[in-house]
Amino acid sequence: MHGQNTDPASSASTPSSSSPVYRVSHDPEGTATLSTTVAHALADCLGIDVTESAAYVHDSVDPDALDALFRPRHDGAPRTGGSLAFHVHDYCVTVFGDGEIVIEPPTGTGIR
Image 1 (spheres, rainbow, N blue to C red):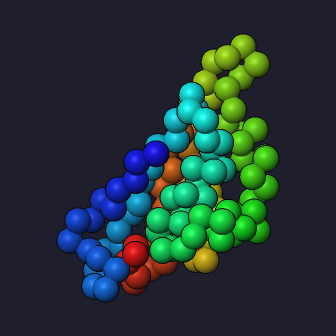
Image 2 (spheres, rainbow, N blue to C red):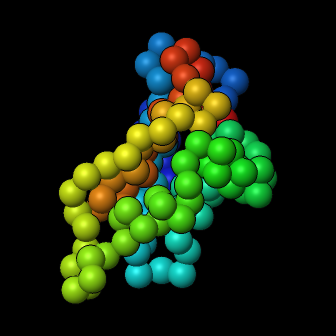
């Protein structure tokens, strides 16, 4: 999992006029589930422990359903289309069928 703040000029202590976006790619061939990758990405964004962010994910979306929604098809072909968006503490989390996860902070704030 590799995340990045796409607005290098922003920081946690200096909110910018344009909200930074955090992006990470889930590896469907790896050992982590998609919901686990989302929880780790949120922990990075919120500056909290991953167990706490996992609880927040669970409060917003069913982790098992999220994993199943983007799991490869029965014939093994990847699911490349579609997306799902939900909110966690005013952060907009969008998960795409290709494994990309985009986390947008609330307007007027920066990612920690």
